[in-house]
Length: 112
Image (cartoon, rainbow, N blue to C red):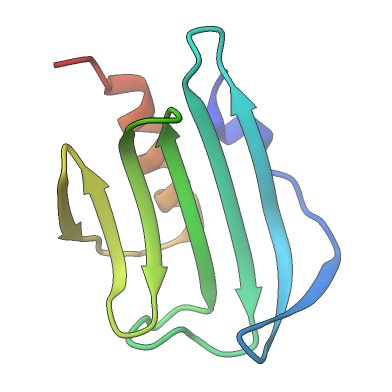
């Protein structure tokens, strides 16, 4: 299944770390091979510093034991990508580009 085909809008409003947030994506899939794909994206009233955008996100691909690929952002660290046991900064441009990059990583992943 293509990751980009499951994006949907949701009007859920919540408070995230004392910031108003709107859930715009929350999906979790378990593939026949047991791999998990989970995507969570919130639109915030203000950015999570040092990010310039207003999204808070967590995109996960792995299983119960191993994180194969994860994209996320957090206060103080900003946007970053985890893969193969390493963490590197991620240059966020748009939400569509982020989801496309994640989808590409999921499709390209091969066991080592």
